[in-house]
Image (cartoon, rainbow over all chains, first blue to last red; front, side, top):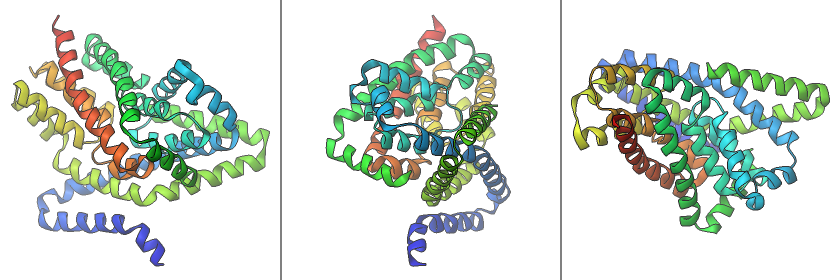
Length: 178
Length: 160
C-alpha cells in the first residue's frame, strides 16, 4: 500500500491542487472540467496504440538490428532513420517518450534518440501538411528547414553537455521502464 | 486524423504479430501494459497540469495575448505561452491562421507554434521520468531558445 502511495504521491498532490484550484477560482470550474475531460479523452485515445507499438517493437526488434541501424556506429544513416521515424509518427510529444525508452533499451545511440524526439515534436508529416494549408507554404517550409537544423544542433549539444555517466544511468533505467 | 494512422499501424502490427506468434504477441501486450502502468503516476500529473493550464489559457485568451503585443516582447510572450500549453496542431494552426489574417506578426506566430511543439513545460514530469531531470530541462531550455531563433528566421522568410 505504502509503495503505491509513494509512487502516486505527485499524482495525489496534483489532484489536490486541482481541487484547491477549482475551489479558489470557481470562475474556472466549468472550463477546468471541460479541459480535463478533453485531455482524458485525448490521452485514452492516443495511449493504447502507442504502447501496443512499443510492446511489439520490444518483442520483435532484435537488439543487434537496432544497434546496427541506429546505434553509435550507425553514422549519418542512423540519424536519418531516427529523423524519419519521428517524422512519420503521430500523436502528441508525450507519446514519444515511452518510445524513446524502448529505443534506448534496444541500443539506439543517445544522439539518435534526441533526434527522434526532436522530429516527433516538430516535423511530423501529417502536421506539416496541415500547417501548409493553414499558415501557408512559405511559413511551414521555412519552419521545417530551420527546425531540421535546430533538431540536430540540440541533439548534439545535449549529448556533449551531459556526462556519459548520466546517459548510461538513463539507459539502465530504460530497461526497467519498458 | 493522425490518431487513425496510429491505430492503423498498431492494428496491422498486432495482427501480423498474432499470425506469426501468439505467445510473443501476448508478451508484447503484457509489456505494453507494464510500461503504461509504469508511467501512469506521471501521466496523471501531466493530465491535471494540462487541464489547469488550458482552463486558464484557453484558445480565446491565447489569441488575445498573441494579438496584443508586438515587437520583441510579443515574440517572447508568444514563446512563453507556447511553452506552457499543450494544444494539438489541428486546433493551434487554424487559431494561428486566424491571428495572422487578423494582422498578427508572422514572427510572433512562428514563435508560438515552434515553442508549442518543441517545448513542453507541463509534460516535464513525464519527460524527466524517461530522460532524467538534467536532460529534460536542458532539452526544453534549448528548444525554447531555438524557438525564438526559428521565429526570427520564419518571420524573415515570410517577408522576403
